[in-house]
Length: 383
Image (tube, rainbow, N blue to C red; front, top):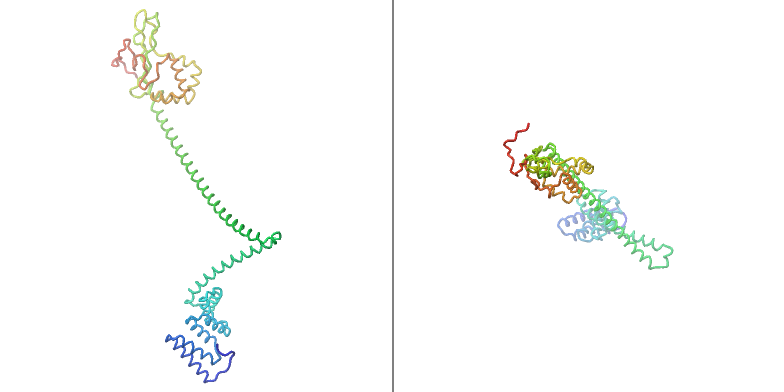
């Protein structure tokens, strides 16, 4: 340090001081840092030192890795000139070397406000980051200390010195548990909402698929219903031969009444066959012919069943596709209806097989009494 206070220097002292400052600058440029510091110190000893001279020596001391001495010179320079940006800057860099983050952050920030320097910007950012972390630690410590003070000030626990520490640990654990619980609940809620959305999408997809299937089935039923006029496909195969003639009475008419052709039937399926009578004299009975349907029309149960859409749909399906009869074998309601109808129509042995029903002679024309196939060549065409 130079002499305290200001004094008026003589011309010789001023010349000497100026010469020493020039020598110090030359020595600094030559890289002889220690000699430059010593020469500048001699100039300071002459007296009437300025803030610039102290800042210059502080810069040399910082380069010589003597941060504490640099801080002292900068402090002296700021006493002489409180607005010296260079003194603040050098002192902030020296405080950074000593990990004095609070002081370094304050001095560098002040220096940049007085005179911004691009070369110090990186150092300022580094010091600011360190200072911020330090502030966070201090804030956490302050909050912990305040929490301890609150625990110790509880009146009924003042004499129990172990309880505050115990309660503090418990409260810390409870805080952590509540945080984890909140996170878990939020996660569970999100997963639940996600599962609900997924389930709704699956239900919607299933409903659309079901609707599509129902529309396709409705179109198929409409197409099948439009293929036939009246009963689809006519009566399949043909009913078995008619009842035998009753003993006595009129002789049987050979062949009986010709069968009614199927209306709009599928190829290969004839109409309702005739029921041959028993040939012979004396033993002939009633002529074979159409089955007696008066019993069907007079039965209220059968008429009520025929008004049931389910029964009509099943009966229509069996008439159009005899193989579908097996589909309803386990349905007691439909099987009961079919059994009752067969009983009313004189009985049909066995079930209704795919191509017709066993029994009497079958065909699509009039059956002959000797069981031979009818001759269709002589049948007149119908308008």
